[in-house]
Image 1 (cartoon, rainbow, N blue to C red):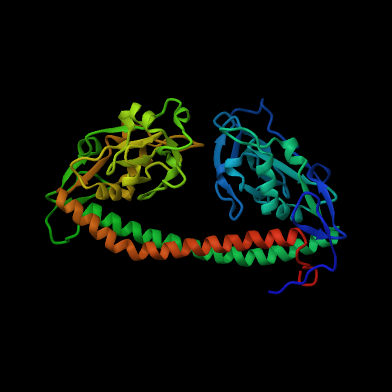
Image 2 (cartoon, rainbow, N blue to C red; image 1 turned 90 degrees about the horizontal axis):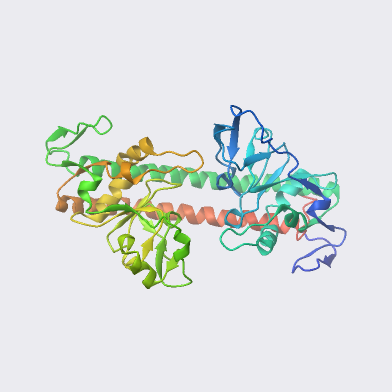
Length: 437
């Protein structure tokens, strides 16, 4: 779609972008109120609330997760009340894209104090405000005004001083109508790709579960595993606990782990760096060789396994060669030994072990499990050569699925970029959508 531009533009002071001549620029505090309603501290402890944390919100998906709890069980940050038309904006840099509008189905929620709740006034429609506060330019402003080292954030008063372009009221309506329609089209395409990605993930999980729980040959004799959730396994397999498979299972550095972070050095792996079968060493923290050696108990080696304990409990990956000598924090370390690491990684990521994780995990805001429980996870264990055969089989079978999944992820990324660029260009008046709204 080719969109026309406005007839004339003027400079927007302090920005590279020009805006239509007849538009105004105003600070948010002159257009909206912030954090009007708060849940009282003396609320009934038994009061049932539905809570939204900053990790449960994104630009593309809005509010995608809530948790039900009583006031006494809720985190102390569960205090912000919202109304229909409000816009919640994360003030914490780690979650800067946690920005979402509140609709009629969400007006009963209690959101984290990590959000600023922006309520549009008479000069700003909630629809246009929603898109203006989701635009990359606004997010960039929040980044530039954030302060703090370990937990960068912006306070509500600084956020209120950020300027946004303000078209006349009738144009705000037209822009909102145009973006509602066009963004909905993009969102449908994103949902389709996400649905395909979920189907591929289910297929991948089924292949892995069958291999690690049943083996590769349906003809071998079977025996009762003695486990109601597993049923029969190959007769020659042993039923072992994790502590009998690995020579050492422990937790990474837990006492003040941030004190060991260095500007450069060896990979220092946290839970957020781990996904199924993969450790992101490009963006992980660093630890000096000296500091890592001083923490020899948790120093990682090629072939070790790291398992996420908090947030996405159970997600496991094998330590690659480029992590050799590094360290880890607040994750479970499974030391490599007389077993095939790739096989154990698949077993840990399969429903066979994830079920056991779910049984022992705890925590409302952040799900996690204890190492004391994890060492007793039960895993049907084939001979080492068969472990390698299973790992090779899984690698061969899921290769095509992984390539299709990567294509889906790239498509979602491109669509998300298109979504962001369209919002940015329209809310700053780079295109005149009045005639097509």
